[in-house]
Length: 164
Image (cartoon, rainbow, N blue to C red; front, top):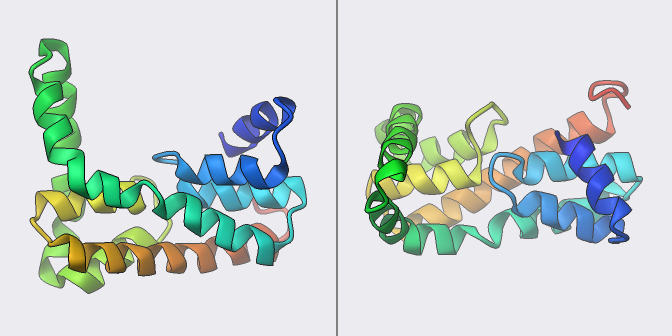
């Protein structure tokens, strides 16, 4: 998915740095896809990492601040109630690991690049488990840095892993 999105955005005439920033902003793809895109586009790792971290972290304070209000509003739309409930249930299920040691759990949940984890899902889980923003935001930031370190090694220093 990151490779296809990279090609589309690059065809629009965006600079490689803007492409990886935009990809890192997106839920699900996040920094992990941004670093893969950076490697595909030939962006040096030391340029790519701060761009991807910034892109991944930019929406997180807004997610933490407004997520409950947005979900409450979306539930009023009958056909969206069920998907919102399912999303919250999934986040609760995946986020149970966070409850045992909230901050370390949140860092690891965000930082270990597995499907369904990342800063967006971590912010959702932190909100659902009522972890204060003053605690969750730094923990999510550390998790993003951990994910960045892992993905940096996988994207740049393990040849052929992602097919390039």
